[in-house]
Length: 144
Image (cartoon, rainbow, N blue to C red; front, side, top):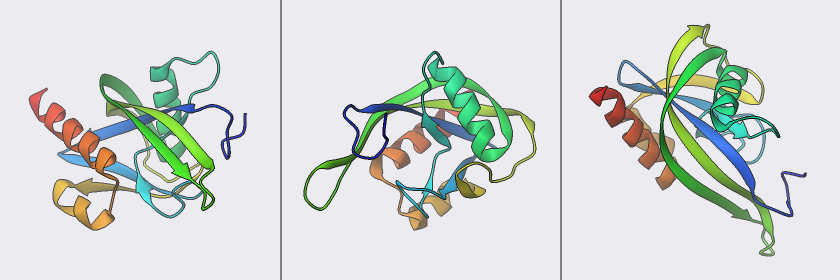
C-alpha cells in the first residue's frame, strides 16, 4: 500500500521516549514532515503488534532499544494536497517509552536525533497533538 495518496488510512506508532525530564525527538529526513522534529515512529507492519512496532521504529530511527509503557493517546494526521485530495492519512498510537540499551544516533529516515527539555519545545513549532502527547509523557514519567 502506498503511503502517499493511500486508499485507506495507515496505522502508525510513536515512541514518547522520556529520560531525565527530557523527550527524544527526530528530525525527519523523508516526507511527510521532511526537516521537521517529531516523535520517533512509523507504520505498523502486518503481523506486528503495536508495541513491537514502537520498539522497532525507535531502534531504527534512534539506535536505542526501548521498553514500552502506557498508551498515551490516539491521534489522526491528515495532510491534503493543494487540490484537496488526501496525500497522507495516518492514525497514530503513541506509547510512553524508556530506554533500555543502545547508543543514540540518527538512523533510518531520521536526519538528526536529540533530547529536548519542556522549555525548548515551543521553538520547534510542533503540532498541537504532538505537544499534547509529549506533555502527557513528561507528566506520566514524573508520576512513575
